[in-house]
Every structure is written in structure tokens, then in C-alpha cells.
Length: 209
Image 1 (tube, rainbow, N blue to C red):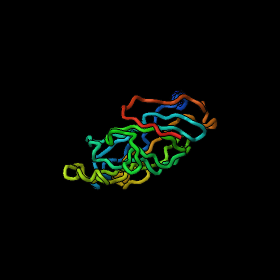
Image 2 (tube, rainbow, N blue to C red):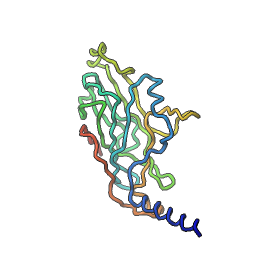
Image 3 (cartoon, rainbow, N blue to C red):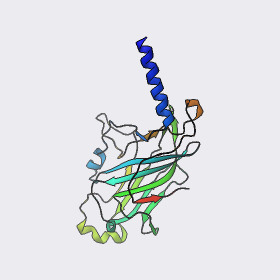
């Protein structure tokens, strides 16, 4: 009898959590996301999902906040973009001397909004993997090479829970994320809940279709 009541209570809490939508959840918190940047001599960055909005079906608008371990002045940056996005736009150019695009003013503390096609797995929407491509000291920014102190200057940082060794060292730099916002009716929850949002940095770029 006690087991039955415990099961019932856990089921109620689970349904309440699913119905509320919640925030984007780290799908692999046990992995070491410092390892790849350490072996590649790349300064460490973190990435958080601060907002998820259901657009329609499996199309979601997400907002990410990226923060570097140290602040790098804008003068060193040549290009910064999000690439490999499974969404209406595959590439989100945030800063580019060649493209004459200047949507951010800080390469080590910025926020960007874009759309993705999430994958439904076990009644969880999973964020498709993508990369953030940094190009410092390229083009006219190369003139500042003598004062560069942050290791490797051109690199991609990637998301995902699917590439790691048996010691938990991830080859990706940020985790994969999932959420339970906007689940289909077969999951037994409200298919049209409101968005989930967390306050974030003021360095914001909104790029949506």
C-alpha cells in the first residue's frame, strides 16, 4: 500500500513538472566539458539556454547566453557565428568584418536568439547539436597578435551529449539540452504552454526567421 501511494505521488509530481514546461535541462551533467578546451589550449566558455518558446510543431525559438572565462576585447575578433543549426537558418552570423555584420559588441559575453527544429525523444524535446565558430586574429584583427594571451585563436565550440570517453571526458564543449515545453498530446500534457524565460545578459542579438 505504501509503495502504491509513493508511486501515485511521484506520478502527480512528474505530470505537474511536464505541464509546467520548466526550463531547458542539461542532458548530461556528469560529463566534463572543460576537457576539450584544455587539450586544445582554448579559453573555456560556458553556454546556457535562457529562453525557450514554442513556435509551432517541433519548431522552437531559443535564446543562448555564452560567457568566456576571461573577457577578450572586441578588437581581437574578426568573425563570430553559430553554424550547423538545424533550423530555418543554418548559420547565424553575429559578427563579421567580411560580411559587414556587427550584432554583438562582446565576443566573451553575448546572447543570441534563433530557431531550431527539436527532436522528440521519450516525451522530451532535444536541442539539435550546433557549433559556435570563433575567429580571432584574422584579417585586420591580426595586427594585435603581439598582445594576444588567450591560447588558440580560431576554433569551433560544439554542443552535445554523444561524444565522450569512458572517463567522462567530452569532445564537445557544451552539453546537449532538452525541455518539456509544448509536448504533443500523446505525452498527456498541455500541447500549448507558455514560454519559459530567465533574465540574462544585456549583450543581445536576436536573429529569427
